[in-house]
Image 1 (tube, each protein chain N blue to C red):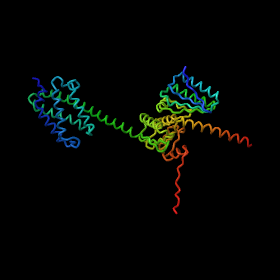
Image 2: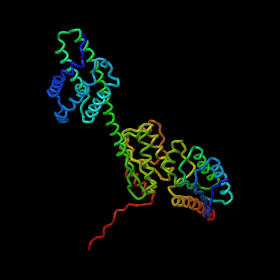
Image 3: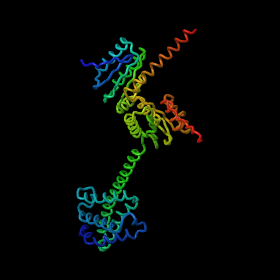
Length: 134
Length: 287
């Protein structure tokens, strides 16, 4: 059974989809990823779909689901490198992927994740600081 | 005795031709700037020649038969030529009707003695030429439509440029009405350019869009959503007061989209997002 590898990079999980996803593979990815987030306590998930040229409503929903699931497990999800044709298809299908962040390429996606997480930590630090000073 | 129309016309061909061309040249509305007289003569000659070769007593009433194919082809050629060169439909119609008149003159001259025969022949010739004229009109309109289609294509091509205004900032001035096919082109161009240039901000300027209705707004929202999916931000600028009014009256929700009044303020916003700053340079005083 094919599996899509999930790489761990510090606080982040990295998924690169290199082959066309079929439905079974996609659902497996979804559950694997959520389990990985739980196991590693990752703060961010980066999914690179630059090699994905065909997308259907099911795939769109899976991507959206991954985003929402990560969100409630306190990890930000970023989808990067979407092809123009894929973007147009998703919009025509009415899937706007509300839950996930998007970036142009892996580099920008990483930047975005760092920004999101350091922002979180900053606010956390400030809150701690205020608590301590009281 | 039944008169052979074809032979009659063939015999009088020279006269018919001269009458026809003379009538055309005498017309005060002759467009000699569009076509030289020699060209007109040779074109008319060709048409008459083929037409007279085709006509015989049997096929006279059936213009759409196989035999008339060459005639209709030549007529189509003439009519497309005229459509592309700016002749009016009236002029093209009168061209064919002029030939009919020349025919009828010839028939009248020849068949003075046989009045019932003349009426019958006149009637049939009339019908034939009317059909040919209608056919000419058809092709004329088709020719015009081709011209219009080509122009539409050209307009869509030139009217959706994607401009790189800054490193990482694209601008897309939209001029003219946004319909679904246009939106498709705009969206494809924009997304492609985002990939190529690696830009993170796109400014959609709609100051050149004459009216925004719910459909256009829908298209705009789609474009913005697609841009977001690609991982870039989209700003809509050039919202004129009338547009703002219609959008609110129609109850369209644009609150999820960054909108700016002018391209300048959109650019300023983009600079802020990219953490860029534009400053006036303080010139050092010369000593």
